[in-house]
Length: 145
Image (cartoon, rainbow, N blue to C red; front, top):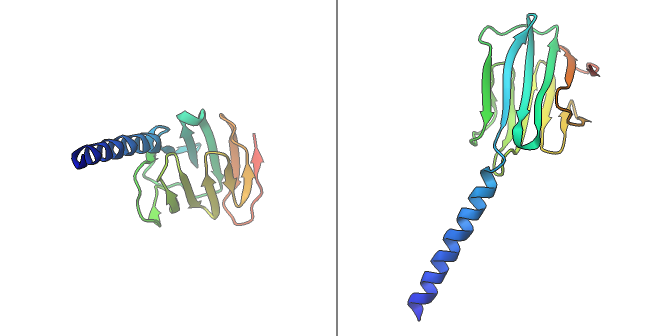
């Protein structure tokens, strides 16, 4: 009898563990493409499972880093803060992907969540293909193309 209880417990544990792990990773990570357009730093945000592509942040009047383009996938947990091709990641939660990523770049705080994009603590609804212009100074105004 004890054997069957142990066996049932082990099977339930492994089934539950497999189900939870599948749900943690099934949507995939945020993908940030750091690149330059017309000598201007650009951050492109992609998340295919949420139907997001080509959400582009353009940092006007910002210095251009020399090591572009680079792609960063926020798939594995890493203790923040850590440097990115430009700016740094100050918060990262990848427990259930895509998770939450907060980046500081050129004086702006950019927070990506599955439900919304937040720039300088102001919510900006997700729109694939959107271009958002940001200036390289604190308190700058947002404008969308």
